[in-house]
Structure formats: structure tokens, C-alpha cells
Length: 332
Length: 275
Image (cartoon, rainbow over all chains, first blue to last red; front, side, top):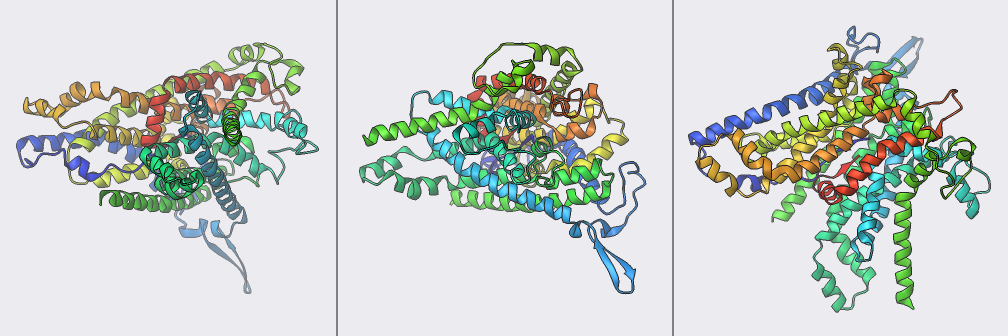
């Protein structure tokens, strides 16, 4: 998935400091006018590409739209989410997203994938960052090498790993059998027990460098004299790590974890390519895309998209709140 | 003794990180250079040097066209988003106006949008204006992730430039547009290279929109083309060709990343980016 996401918002104070008090002069009125002139194209594009389509998606989730007849969509209320069909004589059945086992399976897969992969990436990223922060010969080469998985397109990584994890000719089975960890070849991407782990493996490979770089940036902010002081006091390095380093880089880790989690929740391409049509790895995004464009259930897919959007929106709000608290804390 | 053990352990860890990062791509190159039955023997070291797969992918089918499409889309996306972002960033970082905080928060929120949330609405919009199956649909759609990012990073960068640099120009009565183009643009190029590069990579790698808005083989971009590369039959997956295609589209990215390594790392940490 290619998406770009950003760190903490710029502080208001920093901007205000640059504005001179002469607010009501002709000059600043002209500046104000040009500010809006400069902003309008960007706002317009974002409204067209993000705002309006989002509203449309939410609208379709309350209609009976189908892929072949989107324009003929009619309002049906919440029936895509929740519907009770009465069969008479007290018998009836619930339908809709909230009663769809396949949907909840996709939700579970997404949560499972997100929690496991982000946890592994955080721990591994921290280890990588600590290594890259140490002084050693050839460090710049290792730092460059670490960027390679990040630069490779997700689709290419999925294909590369699909080949490496091939059940008959894959190098992964060969390696593991040589070492003696497995006795017979494993069909990593097809086997229900390993399919999700195959996805997690590729994701960990691709994303750990990103985690490591974000954490490394946090590590480099820790002033060197902290370590000097700890050394003079004869404190064990492990204790220094837990008591000094980790608390100091906690904000950097927190931000990295939230970015990764937001990203993991919407995963699509890796799963679509590595394990196609596999219910064991189907995530919320894959479920939505399938319903929208393959099963001709456009409205139902829109409902799933809307649900996913709400989940991510809540986490985003949480993040903005945390980031703000953090900025406030530093300001004091 | 302990010191030696520690050093060995440390370098073992370094070696692990190196192999972990590089091996899969190394293996893809290795596979792409094998042909025939050699493909199906597991080799850890190069055994042959055959360019047959590369010839195959570049002469049969529309893959060269797919590369061209990707280049057109990514370059256009970068140019448009940088243009829109520089002017917007100037307003957001240098002029105080009512609603700026809200606008910044909105931009941040848009950057976190899951693509799937706008997919249905965007599809309908693109279809109804007749852009389905055209590269314009992708250029337009990619703004959703490149624009918030470029605006954000450039705003942060411009905000940190000293006030004095534009004071003289304001006193001289230069218009804001002149200030942006004559004073800021020359100072901004390092930040613009970084954000432009990251936006390029993001656009180059995008899959979901490219899969949804284009169904014509000639109009596809490389990620979709690679995902859909198939052999003569369902069972026969042409691994050699897939790996050759993968190497072709990845090598330029890796070269870019290694050349601009420092800039990218600073951009990543200023922004936080995943491609």
C-alpha cells in the first residue's frame, strides 16, 4: 500500500511568532487575500478527491446500488448494516453487515494481523534502531541496506516472497529443511494455518526498516551526556536502556506504532496478491473491494468501507489528541 | 573474553540485519537470470547469466507500455502536488488567518483516510466524467495521498525559515506570488526534492486505485501489470518473467533511494512515510 502519513502538527506559536503585530494594515489584508488564493486550489482538489467521494461512499452504504446500476441507487436505510426479515409465525432472520460471519471473520483477521505484525515490527525495529545507533565500521552501508525493503513496491515484495515461499521450488522450504526445522515442504500461502503468518512475515520484512528509522530518529535526540553520566555512575547498560533510553524514546515509538497500526488496518495489496481468495487472510479492505467490484454488491461493499473508515477515524482522533497532549507537555 | 563475545554477538546481529534486508531482492535478481529448468532448482549462488527473462518481458506484451504509464502518472502527480503544495504551504506557514489550525488538522485527517473509504465514491465520479480507463483518473486519485503529505512537510520546512528573508521583499512591496517564486523557491529545493521523491515512490507503487480505475492492459501501471502477469495456463506461473519485471521496476527506485539516502531519511522522520 502506498500512502504517506505525517508526524505531529506544527505548533501554532511558531507560526504566530512570525506574524508582525500590524494586523490591520493594507499589506496584511492583501496577504490574507493571497493566502486564500493560494489555498483554494489545494482545498478544492482535496474536497474533490477525498471529501465528496467519502460522502458518496457513505451515501451508497444506505442504498441498494449495484455496480451495473449505480445511478439507479435507491435509499433503503440501514438495511445493508442491519435487517430483520420476518418469515411469519414468529420465525425470522437477521441480515446485513452486523450479522455477516464473513465480515466478522475479516474484522478478526484484520485485528489479528495488525496486532501481531505491529508488535513484531516494533520490537524488531527497536533492535535495528539500537544497532544502527551504535558506532561501528560499515554503519552507513547497513543503514542504506535497511532502506531496500522499504523502497521495494509492495506488489513486488509480495511476488518475491510468494516465489521464495513456493511449496515445491521455494528457497524458504529448502532453508528450513536443511536446518531441520521442518521435515516436509510447507505450502506457506495456501495452508490455512500458515497463510496469515506468511502475510505477517512479508509485512515484517517490508516495514521493520520504517519502524527502525522512526525509532532511530528518537534515539538520536537523546543527549549523549545522559549516557556519560550513567557510565560514570557505573550503571549497567541494560538498566540504562530500561530506565533512561526507553522512557525518553517512548513518544517516538508511540507515534510509529500508531502510524503502523493505521496502515495495517487498511492493508489490501499484500494480501490480495500473496494469498488471493483466501478466507484465512481476508481483511476488511479486501472484503470491501470484493463486494464492491467482484460480487456486484456495491452498496454492501460501501457499507463495509464506511465501517472501516469509522474505525480508522476513531483511532486518528485518538492520535491527534495524543499528539496535542504531547506538544502541550513539551511547551510547559 | 566477554568483550570479544559481545563484539561477535553485535556483528552477528549486524550481519543478520544485512542479510534480512538484502537477501529477498538478491534472490529475485538471481531467479530473474535463470531460465528453463534451472529456475526450479534452489540455488543460493548465481549459476547462470541468462537475459532471456528480461528479453521476454520487454519484447512480448505491453510491459514497456506499463512502465511508460507509471512514469507518466508518477511524474505528473509529483509536479502537480508540488505546485499546489508550495503555494499552500506558504499560506499555511507564513500568513496567519482564521481557520488555519482547523485546515491543518483536516489535512492531517485526510492523510490518514483509508483508500477503500473513498473507493466507491471515486469510482462513481471517475466513471461519470468519463475518465475510467484513463491515466488521468490515477493522476487525480493519487492526490489524496501525495497532496496532504507534500503540503504538510513543506509547511513544516517553510515555517522554520527565518522571518528576515521575506521582510525586505515585503517592504519593497513584492506580491506574495513573487515572494514565493523568487525568495522561497530557491531555498525550498532540498525539501522539494525529498517530498517529490517520496511522492514519486508512493505513486509508483500504488495498487488499489490502479487496479480499480483501469481495466485496459495498455493503460495499466506496473504494480497491477506485475500482479496480473500470468503464463500460458492457470497453473503455470512464469516466475522468471515476474522476477525480471520486478527487478526492472525496483532497481530505479533502489538507486534513487541510495543516492538520496540522507534526504529520504530526514523526510521520513519529518513525515513518517511508508511506501
